[in-house]
Image: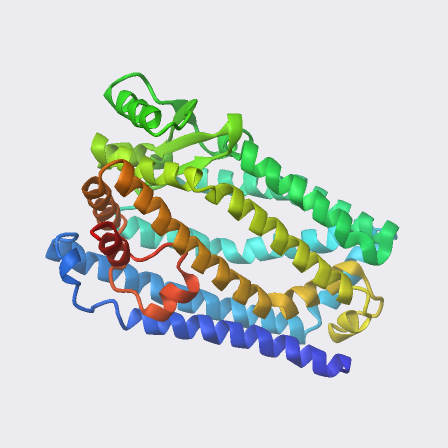
Length: 410
């Protein structure tokens, strides 16, 4: 394969991925106004249902326009030799390959963030605001941006620097050391994310003594779930949408409830949601997902090691001197079809796990309470009750509301 043909292969992959995603979105949009299944007729009053359709349509149009603009910018960057230009700037700053790579990705990251900020601002302060979801202030929006950039520089830059250093020292065997590094990092994030990362953006407070804490602890004791920490997170600081999640394992496991969840659901419904989360733990889904993530990371790094030293990757992007950072850009695009397939497989596994967690909640607590909570959350989030089956199969990590209710009523 020549650099010329590889260049157009990269362009073809980018365009095909865009077209497939857009086609799925269009197919999904054609189902927005479908008749609601009988099992879900009590989710929305007619006025709220029409509001949910309007919300989905606004998001569909926004995504189609913003993704098209992103595609055009990316194609212009390719055809105008943008990567070569950024590479020359990076090499004018240092002769060290690691520093050059860090400067290169720093410029790409900052440029991408600047270009994406107007779309993110519009999404939050126009669409989410229009439908009553937004609670984010302009100050919080830009503060979050700044914190995210700092974290990306420190954490992302640190990991990237180590990977590039491994490559300089060990050559083709760098992937083994990088795999060990990412495995340790993934494990640490699973263990300590709620303690180290969440407090940077949100305030977490222990659930105070009272009826809710008592019923949660009674359920945990009943199913033999050693629960040390129950926290309330100030999700209402940014949105009215509700959520709950389980994090960590061993002595570090904790359950976190959004304050919006506590506001929207009664105690029995909250415990049903938590029973679902406990089901994930009892079925070892956290460990299995961690293991699968580590395996996929290893496979990706191994594939990267097979291609990264090939100068054709840099030549295809019109960069004279082959380098790890340019090879990484080209490989990332070449690997994207495989990534789409592995993502699809992970979603299939995830949906299976969701059914298992629902079944655990059904068998150990109250299926009707879980059904009620799912309906309330869907209504409050203006969720899509009639998604296209292809969208569900490819992109949904959870079964649809209808599928979950049918399963719970078996």
